[in-house]
Length: 366
Image 1 (tube, rainbow, N blue to C red):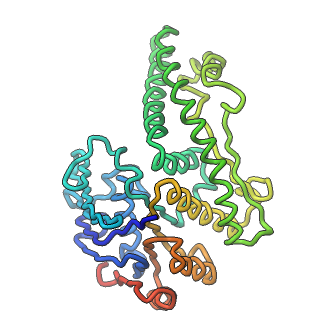
Image 2 (cartoon, rainbow, N blue to C red):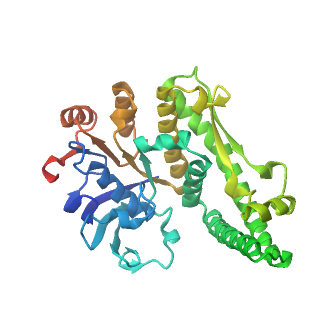
Image 3 (tube, one colour):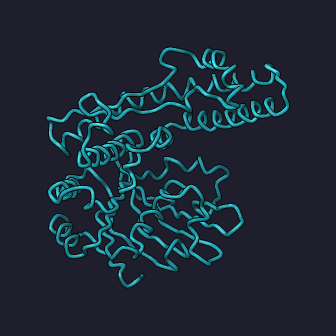
């Protein structure tokens, strides 16, 4: 098992940082400073270099510093004895450039899983409170890093879905219909849905015990949690679903059933946690969920992902934070990045656990 280590990082015109450089320690790195100092921005830059995109924004344009014409991120990733330079750059109005070892990717999806990362952020509560799309994206993000066939099927499915929906809109607008034209996309959707469904089924089966382990560590054995995979493909095939919903889809002008409508049900004592769970229970569930992702990626890839903990003190009481940090010395985790507004609290906490921990005060960079 190898650790993924980010040794160096450079940001230019990325969000609120004009230009800043870092050299990190292989274990604990703490970024401290008041709100607005750009702590979370550093974590997001790391996320971009690992996942090709921001954790917080769908559009890359939001990452360019206000009034700047471009942004650049550069990092040095280390696995075992091999160092790989990673570059991401974007000029306004142009295509994003993403390179490793000075070689640009033809497809950004080829980068996924190469440098795994897990982010725990206060924004993660949307996994519980938001609609099904947030939970599907969560599931897709984890599986895509470890299963290239799944990623390929998912991208192909989404293309076919978009084309089928466009055709349904065309039929409605022109008061016409040609079933043979739809059948081309129906066949593609059916083929790819089998791969997506079986992969998600396996993921949830393997993932649930890991989640239960971490939640028990967070909240004790007396609170029982779980995940249900909600899918219309449990009882039906995609081919049948598309046939059965054809008349409805013609009226709606979009595809109403399929793996793009699935969901995960997060449970506490067999009930939906968004209904019965307290704020504290929901926070513990989300942290346990993300730590389970860490284990899942580590087991599948043979690499310890980088762990990004954004405002972790806002999520957990101090004893939970200390317990989490102590796991570092047991070699459970690899490199960790923590943000906090209280430098003294952070420095005391991490230095008492790991002498090699490094604290970066961003107050002077506001």
